[in-house]
Length: 560
Image (cartoon, rainbow, N blue to C red):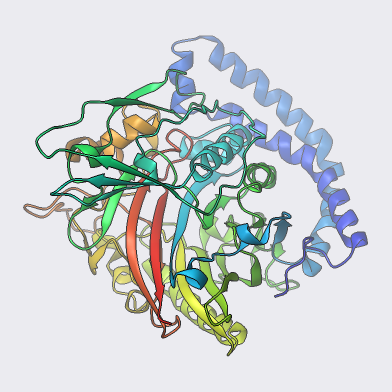
């Protein structure tokens, strides 16, 4: 599908849609507040303590918002009658494009040197309407969206510093997230920083002499991501682990780390559960200085497909895709088999083709990037497997229709919230799906078995605000501790009627990893070779979401 900035074919339809939504919004907001005032988070309950005013607040607040809801309901009905029919002509996403220099929109590494590294990141943000987010023990959706946008911009916008240790016994490289260079910006929950800028594509290189017999004792001041649950104290952290021991963790074939910040110079960012439109707009404003091309408000509303008798979609897909590279094509598909509460949202697949640049022969270099959010309820693996079948077919059809003979494909990535893990007995069906024969998972040792260094990405919701996990530094320390991790990461789901035996003898406790970044080699150019440079589990959004973001740094080498 050709990309247009507006989801509507003309200004008249866009204006009518905006008018209809403006009539709906007051009633929607009062309903949202009616539910929110009755549902508090553990942080709010802890802050209020034994305050006797809480029942009064709930009583009078619920009456007030209910009356306002009734008053505005007739107006909302008129708006709905205008808004709903217009969904039949709405394109399935909004496209935000910033004016950016050609240097920032292309990757010249493959053209000049025949090799380049691409960084992909994925995060589930739980940016639902505030009342619904509270059922996940999260609140203040708009403030969280602003804070998340600034946190991501802070991490991604840092200089891309590569640090090499000059040591007879070590040639490890420190990743940018563990740089010994201090950073100075500190973000407050809900703050807005207008000064974010696009980093240079060139990396600064710092060489550090290092004696094997000495252990560095320097400490650095690390910025802490502060939110309403985090005190404004700058955290102190010892010298990066790479200077103290082995650098990036390297058990087996994949370098990995637990990082307190997003990697610098992320090329493509996929976000899930950005259901709230205003939250999506806040993220777009925060990230657009770094990502010139953003697709948001992805998915359809009302009946999907339009004019059908399928379930009514109250929410979009929640997907949000930000890219440094321009989109050539993009296509969205909605899963038709969702059930229960998942049927209220237009979850599905977003497939995109991006223009990377040119190679030494001046051929176009492109990449394919696919985002999904699968069916959520536990015990319904058959639905997820059916959705994975659809995903493989949709991706194959999209690539067959958009691939040109004069182009070289340098990467093919699939990421998102799969809502199943690789350690739960209840997810055996999904773990053995054929998708994992097509796409490589750098964290997976085999069906039902993770690599020993892997960390679960789904946090226990009741303990989101515990001191051990409410700051990036604390969450990092917790994830690196096997005993602490099992208290805050969701455990595997047992098969129905069977007791859970986990972990196996002499195996580490990992927990549920449901956020994936996969890559495929079969579909890329025969002149390209890929290698995983780094997998990261990111703690920068501690206290802001119930998932741990992940990133993948993929090196691509192209034969001349």
